[in-house]
Image 1 (spheres, helix red, strand yellow):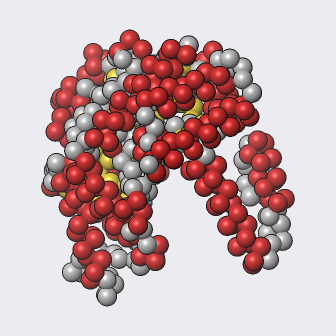
Image 2 (image 1 turned 90 degrees about the horizontal axis):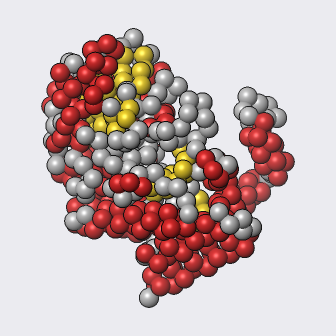
Length: 438
Ligand SMILES: *Cc1c(COP(=O)(O)O)cnc(C)c1O
């Protein structure tokens, strides 16, 4: 047995893992059970109960969605379409297997939804598998403009053997450089163009991008992993109606469902290729336990009429304005900061995104660093990315958001020690939780 989990990891990671390993040595079976329980309890307390979670790529499911999560179902492989499955005895899962994609497609206002991907990364790999051949070129958003790992050569496109080129980007417009796009596509001849970013403050000009992409004989994928909660509610933008050929997204970020990925399209021929790439291409057991909470979440989004999405966007604007008033430098300041639930702080003057993130974590405020479109090549992530989807679910109102901004100002602008600020953060969470209980 190796005495190290990942000897190839960075020194920082190896130090941390060695410390953890030293605490879990030679455990009896009871010791393992107790260690697991303690870790889960401590995690729930730190993150769910006491933390102010501003991390954009997460959420909490609704009570109703959580109530139908049944891990036993996840271990029942259910392969192929209802009526012709490889396994017998799973007739009642047919209901979920028809209900979930039907509701997701209705919610999106599109014809086809493939919901069996375990993640958006896998959904994107399925799109590459269906719509490209190894050696093809795809064009994606640069990383500093929020292009995700699953768009870049280090991720899923590399697995498919694709050549990946960065789209021309207009940092001032927060979008693809439309003037440069036509000549770029002419030169690079991509089979597929991918838009939709991990930080998206303003909608893409999908119609103009799609027109150029289609004129060049390529297809357009819009990755709405982060925007799904807004897009599903008919807010922010309607990528398929505006001209994208395929939509993918994560179901656990702003959408607020179980972890998983969705692929959606209006094109029947594309739908068949995409679906076949998922099964039998990339899945056997796909974890059917995700279908029930996914169906419940989709039904809730439709019944909600966009209320949650609107509150998330309003909260992002409130928090951004409060942070600007504290003295932070905000992205998109000239355009009202944001039109989504995302906002971003330029943390270059605060020691960079990573240092600011670590300092806030010590104060019980959790988020992530991210690259910003105007950072220099090779410069470490200079931004802090914030999403309001979780704090809105937790009941944060405008005053709570302003208090959060003040705590962030204390820690990052006024040199306050994180420890005492963490006490204030926990206090704020308690107050909000009590208020929610009425
Ligand atoms: C988070 C993210 C993904 C990956 O989602 P997973 O479901 O975690 O695999 C893909 N694309 C974008 C743009 C993302 O931000």
